[in-house]
Length: 152
Image (cartoon, rainbow, N blue to C red; front, side):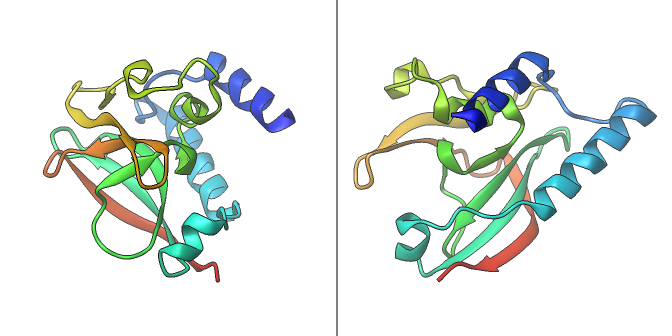
């Protein structure tokens, strides 16, 4: 419960973009990257069912090279879907998983770059796991691996 309250507070305080426009914003991005490196990855049945390998990726817009989000990917292979409960940062996207108003894919916004408004992902409901996610549009983003961990 406390975790959800913190996320909702950051939703109110967080701007929609986190690109470095000046020196203070650059320091904020470095602090976020340190936070991502130090945090513990989620270990659950979804992680174990995909082989027990988890990686944190930085999702970057292919058009303007803007950081869109940090995401914990479980398993091997390319990034096809981004599940809401695996988004690490920014807080306005992370908070979608804990928002009680979001029950179906129609309640979700498009995943787009906050700088150039390029659509990177569309909302979907993954029937096999009964989870909300973004279907990633191939070619509109690229990834940088930040952290890797075995979660068996």
